[in-house]
Length: 481
Image (cartoon, rainbow, N blue to C red; front, side):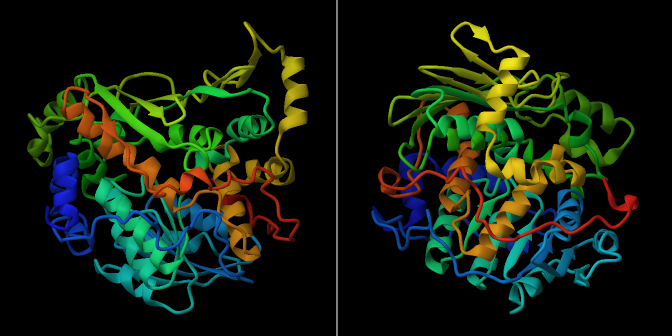
């Protein structure tokens, strides 16, 4: 066997999915210049790590100097949030659309921040990464650009926060891992749902043994985005529609991230294998045909094979536990992330809202639940929960995520989500594609920790440093969202 990653992936059955996924995305947005060629030889991952990033505490940063790439949707909201966190300095904003960069900068009116704008040219983002006065690059671009941008930024000496999913192929997952280990730069996926109030509550309960041994967990992303997927205004050059030509669990991390932390995956247990099944597409093909009748720009999507409405992926861990993750963003259903935790002593379920806790066959009463909340709500939720709700971002969890990240960087603490979590949670996408395309046969899940999962320590649920990282006041009602 030739000693390169392409041969390795071919023999393990992963190459087809990786190349198929990337081929769908060639030639749109600014992917061509940034996307790493997956046919380029890479060394097979060695049995040992270059450096273990789990639990790694980077040197303290008195002020975290931040550059943003991509401010069309979520990135713009992040600019506003971080501008209110003490100890940050927003140095640069980049978006290929000048009007989006300008709008993001306007959110900073009245603040100390005066970022340089990088716009119009496809490679402007590299200039931002090349700057010596930036510590953290915050990436909120189309999915296919996440890994190339994150890898480039880390190689330029920057920590990285990257939106979900951080990678769309298994090859990209390994690139993130290898680059983070080589550069000793954090690569954190911005999985905001790990900072949801109920998710944080159940994580603390699990850490304190409330559920007993965890047996089974469930998560999901069920969100009717049918019309949004076809929106030219919302998604630059219809990039998200193009992603939906892949058939699998394309957006797994909102449900998977929180339960992975509860189950200590990469830190005491690991994913062993998965199976994945997709229904047929009942919605997207029909919409493409209907839109094409009035708008010729949609004709390339007529008679295309879109992903199935519902994907269900089931994972077995090395310790014999199970996880079910679902994805459906086109069926007319109420929003749900499910978030179910089942243990030998108790159960929690987050949807339908509000969250519920049960010991045995009966759900706790409202009064009993309030007692449990008071006992198990973690310190970070108590410290900034009310403030986070005022600043917004999916009920406040986005703000908590950003606040916690800055607090860790300023105080030299490990991040809650490291590069191994980033890679593992993202890998469910391409691995599920592989299973779906092979009649739902089981697919082995790579161990991105290379065996260190046996000794890595769990995420510290206390989530507080005792440091004085604070929150700056709002700048008028017109800046809220």
